[in-house]
Length: 389
Image 1 (cartoon, rainbow, N blue to C red):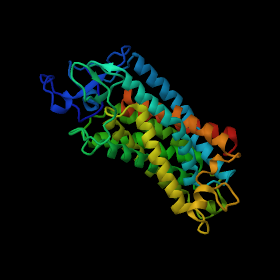
Image 2: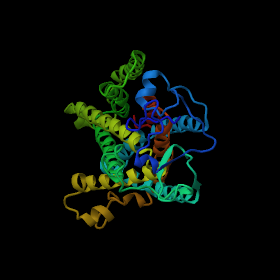
Image 3: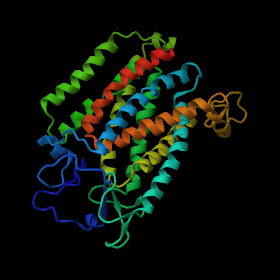
Image 4: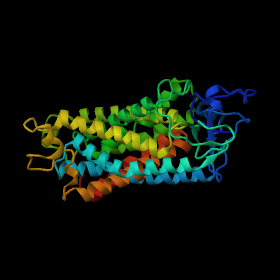
């Protein structure tokens, strides 16, 4: 039995051998140390089925252990995002979209080589109907000797994906960019802790989306999510908006920051759902690198359109030509910032987002989303430690 969270991939009992032409060309492969996490009568199950029959249980195989470890590391490292962006805003006077662009550029430097190594590793290995890390791969070779031939970026995996794979990956990148940019801009109008609280509304939005889509969500799960979020919400109501610009406090613009963070949470839900659809066709590092490149491009373009000095040329905004400061797209390569941004990119790119994407392949989306409620506590502690709040 193969447990899969993709609602499009479903076989009813008694029809396990009814393979479509597409599925007959898909080679499913898994690491030899891996065993199935759950069983529901010997047929392929979806997140909806597993959720409704209670089949999502604790798994003790290698992949699940690594998923929980990566999730823990991702939550801890992800807690640095808010404080670092706040530090860049308060100390370095770096504008939000520019800060996002700097971080994503540094992430790409680490992620692209890892994606290439992942591709070369899979390409060297021959497969005979097995699975590796739950990733399905289309093979162009004969059935007797099937091998990984690369991600089919322009292929439409009907009925699982309605558009070519590259469109879905770009969509994930756009939604991730929205999640990042709306949250960073919102940080200018509220505290880091409150921004993290509202941006982490996505477990509630995810539960509502699952319920609206017909997935059975138990009363206890509703209560668990609401109680967890309610606790950190009560704490945030007692927090005073310190370290906010005087003009923000004077004009009571905190509501704008919270609204932007709410939109960020909605974008996160769309990222989660789309990753569940594409994870069977794009390996982990290649997906993370591709979406990061999209976010870097959108962040840089947003800076050029919304934040760059009207008196400076695009060449100046990109390469710092004619500028007295390093507030340009490649300004992070200056001596003042390169070590800080490089370290930031490694922590967020390699540890945080790669960890989140890996965990999402093995942990149910509702559990994954609920665990991120720990982020505000980590963010608040780190913000206090570095003195930005």
